[in-house]
Image (cartoon, rainbow, N blue to C red):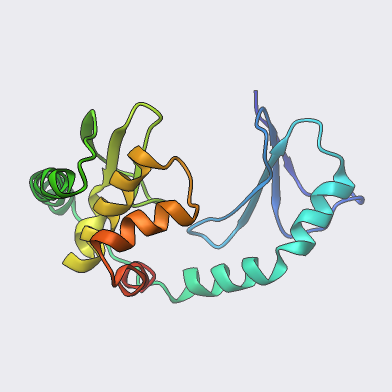
Amino acid sequence: MKIIHKIDDEELLSGFTLIRMRRKTLYIRIKDDLSIEVKVPTRTPNSEVNDFVKRHEKWIKKHTERQMNKPKIELSSDDIIRLKNEAYEYLTEKTQYYSKIMKLYPTSVKITEARTRFGSCSPKNSICYSYRLMLYPEEAREYVVVHELAHIKHKNHGKDFYKTIENILPNYKERRELLKK
């Protein structure tokens, strides 16, 4: 059950939408319309929400600016269908290629319409990629494939996770930067 509060509570900072829901962590999201959404566990005190938002002011500013400067691409339904087909063919092939090199095999590969992430790896090792990844250079796409495959072995973003990526793509940091442009 989600409880959504538009912030008009005097105890809370203004400028964001607060969503109380069943979850364990606090989360900030900058939406496409530049509005700020804060998701928190149901019983989180307002003071903790305020402290969390204040601690992340620099992050909020940085990501709001990034969102403002992000080019807006309008895609027709034909473009989307074409990109999904290209994504499935290309990303499935790249996943198979890097799976053999890394000796890490997903249970399945799916193409999604995700807007906020390029890829994900489920606890059961199913990998999903956003078709929007096809709008980025090949070096960036390969990075996402290797990144998601590394999650089969490491379910976190620790040192060993990045070492696994670096063993395959020594220039992974430059490739990752391409996703931010």
